[in-house]
Structures are given as structure tokens and as C-alpha cells.
Image (cartoon, rainbow, N blue to C red; front, side, top):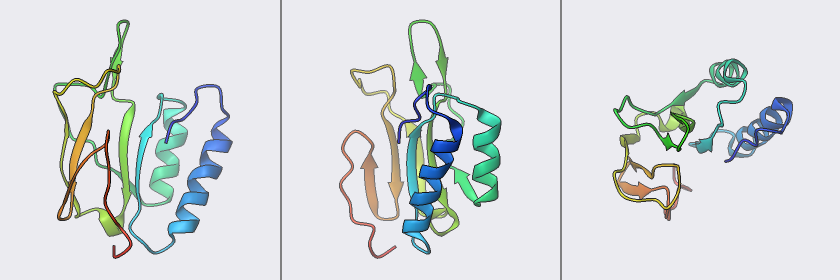
Length: 123
């Protein structure tokens, strides 16, 4: 999910609510380029919906541009997947982008965000 810097936060919250409504009682995992827009509003929303940011502390930021670096790329999940998201890290592999490749394991599946192919219908 990419949060457009020009889009109103209300639209973003509406989209996130739609995702949560559709997934309802299932495990939910959202990967997001947050562009650090209205960080406070996003944090409040995540807390209110009992969503967890899975990013782990790292010496490398998820975004490394020529003028700045930050951790704008987030991996978010609900309580059902909280114990399933493991080994989260920024990859040192080249990504052809200012954004680093994020890797994590999801239960028995090993994933890489540049090429994610797995089935979550049983979670």
C-alpha cells in the first residue's frame, strides 16, 4: 500500500478500514510506504484497530534517498498474525529503488516483498 503524500488522511483511513472489514476475522498483513504523512494520525488509527508495526530496529533505514533516509516503509499485522511474522529485516540486496527490500518469514513461508507469492486463506 502506498500512501500518496497529496491524499487526505481521511481517504487513507477509509481504505484501511475497508481492508480490515474485508479481512474481518482473518489474519491481516499490510505492507505500506507511509511517506510519514501525519504520523500521529496513523499511529492513533493503528492503536485503535489493534494493529502492530512489525519493523525491527536496524542500522539501515527502509528508505535511503539522496537527501534523506527514514523508516517510512511499514509492515503491519493484526493480532492473529502477530506471532507468525518473524525474522523481519531490511535486505542488503540491491532494489533498483530508494526503498530497501524488506524480508520476513510468515509462519512457514519465507517472503520477500519484491516477489511475494503465498496463500493465506488458511490463516
